Image: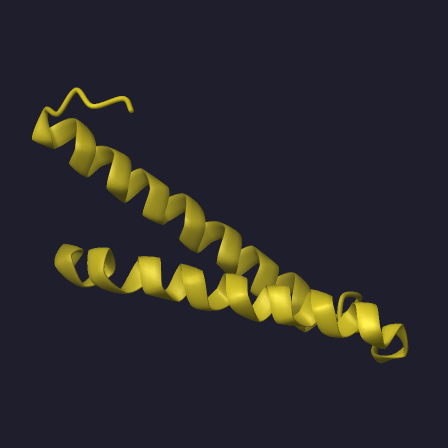
Length: 72
């Protein structure tokens, strides 16, 4: 199950971020739609935030577990 999350979460995070970016751009062109003021936007934003944080934690734990000292 852990391997499943490591494979799916980064892709899901990217897809959600692109969807949010699309909503922001569409709302700039036509503010009457109110795409950024509804409940679906808030839920999508929360899901994207949670996916991004969990992805970062998984990547950081893998990096710490591997013992690499690359700080770029």
